[in-house]
Length: 336
Image (cartoon, rainbow, N blue to C red; front, side, top):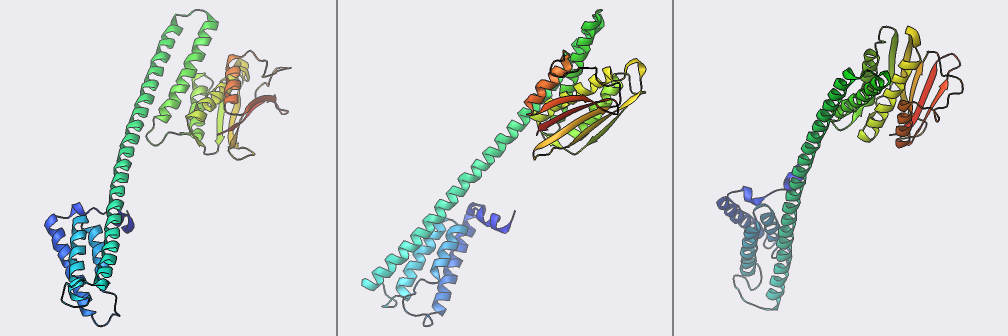
């Protein structure tokens, strides 16, 4: 905290009352002594020149009561010692004008300081209340994420148990796909639960998720996966659909690009797009390539249909095409 901030938040109540009154007396005494020494050196019409700073400083640093006391003592002493006729409380037009002027300036100064201090107290209380509310919301949000992640894990466990009792191959594959998608959502939720922030590092996420997908498919010994991604931190509105799209594309590649134990490699690229605020996700493989007349808009694959819908949610489009040198390239340019 800077010196200016410390001064702006100064509270006279931090000083013992006896000490405040002692300092107020000292301030008045110093102002009076300086004014007394300057008598004869100042031109006529400056009876309060040294008292105004004492009133202002005393009001701010010592309190309103001390400021008023300094102002009253200063006004009376100036009237008696420095306003003709000297050493007298005589009333004339000159003394009345001088006293009214002094009372007006001193009163305005003390009032402004008092109102300013009240405003600062109110702002400080509001700031503390907002900080407490923000902390409560943060804790509630983290608790909600934690509970959602636990619930997703429970659902995933139930589906895995159900898969063991299913004999139909198609139903088993559907259950496995559901478990995989739920586990992926749970992984993103755990990343969001990280106290370091409510964002996901997509480069690390793609690397970790891609490795897990290859290992869980049983293709780790014959299919290599490389992730080349720029550091991109995004919030849940982007990380959730983007993570699901990337996972669907990698799984689709593992299922269809390398049949019959074929070996190969998958490369995941994440780079900046052509326009600001956009990025490009590319998933390239050297597998057998897409079938003839493939149209991603007409495919009946549930995974690719889900990926297409999430691409629209990100304000982008998903395209897949056969590479001239062999294999397939999927491209997603999206907003983040």
